[in-house]
Length: 237
Image 1 (cartoon, rainbow, N blue to C red):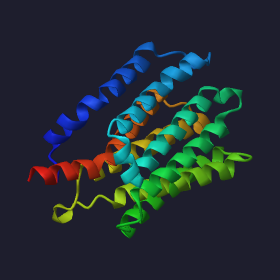
Image 2 (cartoon, rainbow, N blue to C red):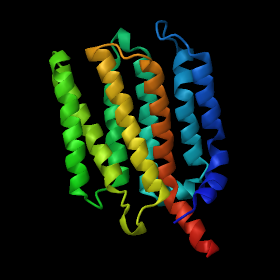
Image 3 (cartoon, rainbow, N blue to C red):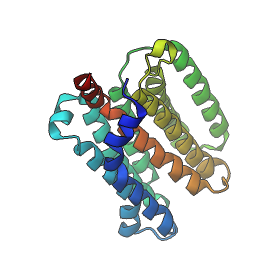
Image 4 (spheres, helix red, strand yellow):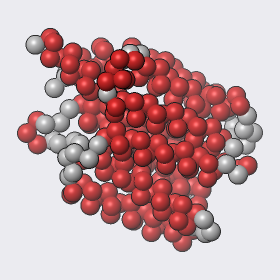
């Protein structure tokens, strides 16, 4: 297993632009009441930096590892979703929902179906079902089934990320832990969006949503570099 110190030394510098872009977003804190292409750029900038983070590992790395390519594709659709949600009050909320649904499908495929971990799947199913039951009385029209499908997709993504984390017998790796934490934070972010939009105003909702979202995307992007770091570690032994 690659040590955390090695991870920080190898991956930390590549993430500096992401941290700077995230700080810019929170410092500017542009009002959501007046959407513009500039506000869309500022919101998407941290995700663009995660594209660069993955590309910095080289095209040969991306070409050799399909999971990394799928996560990069998921980040691209995430940026599109972010842009659509800037104009959600102008009728583009469903478009953003679709982009993030595709993102979760790509992430699920990147995390894979092994190990199956049925118990993790059952836990995620219960959490997802309870979340939908809470939202259901407030939903109407197409959102009644669109939200159900979306919760199923993000729940499946969460299951595949959590399933890969095997704490017993030292089988876990820092990247699998990263994927697990990222998926959980993504679910927290999206549940906060849903509750705030359909149920009742959540105090400091925007800060909660964006902080958990950016952290989730960073952790999921980090989970794509396991193969490279493992290879580096083997060469050093």
